[in-house]
Length: 497
Ligand SMILES: *Cc1c(COP(=O)(O)O)cnc(C)c1O
Image (cartoon, rainbow, N blue to C red):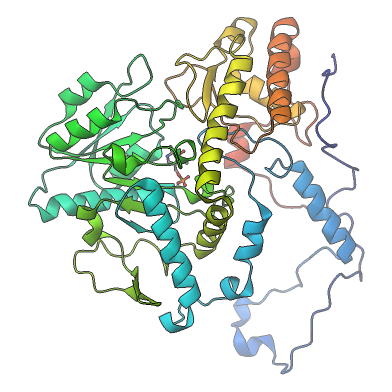
């Protein structure tokens, strides 16, 4: 088989075949010294005999240097933003400045006890209050909660707020949530989980909300319309002002999924174009890390009429003091323990402070420019069914189907070139979708390398399709049975003896 012409990732994927850490273990080697307990009590004093293990655990015995190398090697077998481009559309995998991490680890933040009284955490409350004010201002809204732990939980909070609002007006019958078919799967899942009914709306030929279909769907049972803007095709909903007018005329509220706010910050404000409730994803727009299950943060900003329903506690400022307020009779209650994922708040606060107004705007502009530059470089080979957009571009791999190459093959082949694959097969309304979001932190050189790789793969797909369909060739593991890998993962080390 022909070797890939450019199979060399930034550095080799597998430095040295050193084996698993269990294979490096030698009896008696140690990288740490565990202090002896001051009071030695037999374990059976504390635990029932049935809970005690018969033999000590077979932990690898290695010096600190080997432990370090073990983790460094593992990190190189993975792909991550600190290694190379991670253009996962809809996920905004931008580089996370390390100063954010330093700030979140300051002992005054990192070691706070979540049950400390207000008087002892004035700095933390002030930081949250200020971050809330900034996020409210950036969104053009009136009030905010930082409590939700992710975008999806922010949606849930937002839908609860909307429901509480309708109930407070004697309009409990409003149970339908209208959602376009380009939406992220969490939108319909949220509405259904909240006990409301989802009505899906087909997007129009522009890949935007179809106004005629919206008008036909709106009615006295409509609770809300959930709109993502820019939407998951990367398109700005240019009719949003008209959409807001129609929604309000029908007595419903407009929810905006703000996961794509990285295209808008400092440029346009959802509150100004008619949005009533929106969530942010701090772990996308404001560079806090994500992946591997979190932690995330999904603040929800609202217009004044929804403020009484916000989760408790809210943080208020009284002169130079900050205080948590629980006595909020109309509140929907608590959405997350304590004050949410506070470490994420510190990171987002740091990011916004570092950039300032002009800097934030510049990130949005660069994110949009980068996506459009990439789109322009690849569109001759990878058509864009809905055209170019904002911060991401959704291309289609259909031209390669005739040589037996699917989008999933192209994604796997990209790994050989040292890139993480983009999001694929989403949004569902684009056949063989490749959803690419380079983010503003990609340099032009990196965008060019990525575009070159895609163009090279397009060439390979025509000249030598087996090279692509058998990819990846350079990763520690090749093609997996993906269903079996998810359902029957083989994660236990089997000892020989
Ligand atoms: C990421 C994303 C969500 C969900 O956010 P999580 O933080 O992953 O729960 C919702 N909508 C859109 C458009 C997204 O990109």
